[in-house]
Amino acid sequence: MVTIIPQNPKLWRPSPPTSSSLLFTVKKFHPKISNTLNNNDETKQSSAGKIKREVLTKEGRTKLNIYSDRDFYAYPRFVTHVDDGFISTLTNLYRQRLRPDSEILDLMSSWVSHLPQEVVFERVVGHGLNAQELAKNPRLDYFIVKDLNQEQKLEFEDCSFDAVLCTVSVQYLQQPEKVFGEVFRVLKPGGVFIVSFSNRMFYEKAISAWREGSAYGRVQLVVQYFQCVEGFTQPEIIRKLPDVPDDKSPFSGLMRLLGLLSASDPFYAVVSYKNFKPVYE
Image (cartoon, rainbow, N blue to C red; front, top):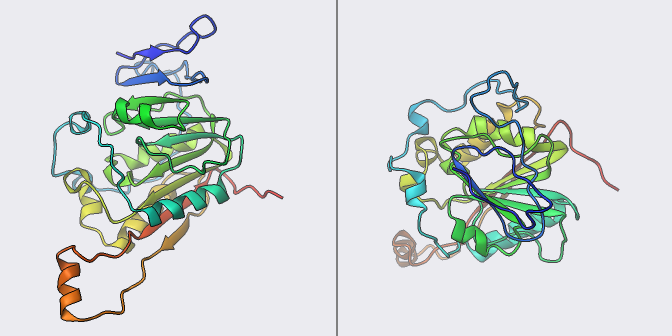
């Protein structure tokens, strides 16, 4: 059952709830919830992006840890999952691609915001699996708790957002084609979807296709996620790789092998737009 906590119940009424998500208002904005989310009503036609083909095989979607994702994320993890260099690069990318006063959906978010502090947005909506983490995120105006591996439908109206973000989490999606299709639906025409990732992961929760792939293969996998949905522009790939240390001594090699001497996290992002890439002066 959905629990909705409105900021001002006199001015807002919730739409009919779905069965697998919780939505919380944490600041001043009210959710623009779709009123056509009855999953049993097959007469309503979805306007999600048309999926042209499946990218993953059945085996490619499997995880080592087959237990519920909700159970895995039941306890908050107030840690950062990438280093400062990665975060700085991502924030600069957001600074370049996200326009002020835009409406943003931060998918698979956490307690940390990577948005530039000096930029004011119209609203920022978060999504994740742990309410305690999301409640700590200072940039979220409200958030939704939902397991996208169980149900991919997003509780938002068509063309609700100027941008959708997914940070270091795409490796956990077992139905990425459907999720990317839903992202296409909730984006406004010209809206941007930015998917960023590194080489870190919860290994037992990442899908097989990601675990067994190379860095190049993972980038191409995300590119294919975009390409399988009709209407996304040609994906743009952004990379920032760590410098290779000059010290090639056996001792340094052993230290790196043991994880005691490591380079910074590599940065990868794949960026695409709904229908067209806007040109701003």
